[in-house]
Length: 408
Ligand SMILES: Cc1cc2nc3c(=O)[nH]c(=O)nc-3n(C[C@H](O)[C@H](O)[C@H](O)COP(=O)(O)OP(=O)(O)OC[C@H]3O[C@@H](n4cnc5c(N)ncnc54)[C@H](O)[C@@H]3O)c2cc1C
Image 1 (tube, rainbow, N blue to C red):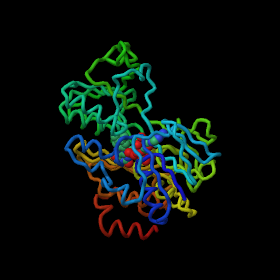
Image 2 (cartoon, rainbow, N blue to C red):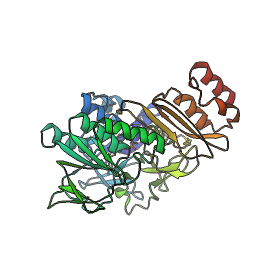
Image 3 (cartoon, rainbow, N blue to C red):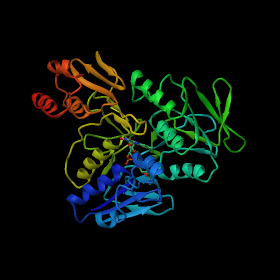
Image 4 (tube, helix red, strand yellow):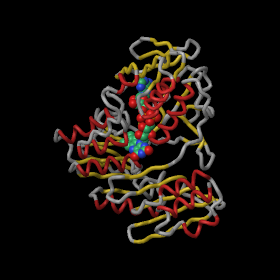
């Protein structure tokens, strides 16, 4: 069995390891356009802040130990499902028996001038290296970031840590609008400003401007802001370019069935490039987070190895580590009942729908995250527990255990 995996992110790597666990004989080829061994994007900021190498989440020997023919710096241009082969940008073609598409997502910058040279991002390790080297070589002392979503916040905190003067413009009236409710976002905003980041809300950038190279951003007001370093952190979109002409169905991401199989024979897909059901709300969604990519990689790997295993659905969850105060959000941020308690810097907000826990946001004390998460994914009626969800010790030791057992 010859299996090709496109992409060496968490989804591709987990799929390769899973196949190898169940099939010692399969020929495994992994193709990545990045010039690196597998890395973990969530750990990139730490790498640049404190030199930690935790982003290299697999050892240098990983390809040999896993028995993977690892080809870095190799880009897939097209897939030909009928012929069971992929075409590389080099012109070479490779045949497969089974294929996994784990191509992740790319920066999406819907602004005029976004294709000008001189615009940086933090979406991949190569992009992040270029950005940070501008700072390390003394070429950038000031930065302008468009977007205050999760990745924009990470970049702002990183650059401020590296001594750069950072201005961040956000068109919405809060930071991290996809992830945080207004109250949690207000705390995050205060902390960002304490870190020295000049976050400007309700400020829409309409274009990158410059003569041949981007030199500034134009705001909706007409004002042009300039800085040494211009960064787009305006969102991501699945990498689907290589599917053109393949007949593989897509919507916002690649469409897959319960076993993460595409509509093309012997082709599976996993990670940020797919669209899946949310296991809490049942809605179809792009869930671009690390744990989902890993679990989808595991399920895809089992199916690539010939088992018939269904995926339970994705989750929305994220946390911000570098603010100095942990912030963790999971599930949705709307409900027919909202439980909220703030004690100093600790804020706990829980969203219920029809007595089911559908989301929560924790700022400061995140000790209840485990049990709240368990209650959320179990999807049980928690009427009897509602009064204790805001207790400060809820989530600790036996309290948590009993709650889970009672509702298991
Ligand atoms: C800065 C940053 C911080 C993050 N922090 C968090 C966090 O704290 N928590 C969290 O849960 N998630 C976080 N994420 C999101 C998380 O990293 C992603 O959800 C996860 O990496 C997705 O894994 P993946 O394998 O689907 O795709 P990716 O990790 O994107 O890997 C896909 C790989 O495929 C390669 N590729 C694409 N097209 C081709 C092609 N045609 N040919 C060959 N190779 C190709 C890409 O270059 C890429 O290396 C963060 C992401 C970033 C960028």
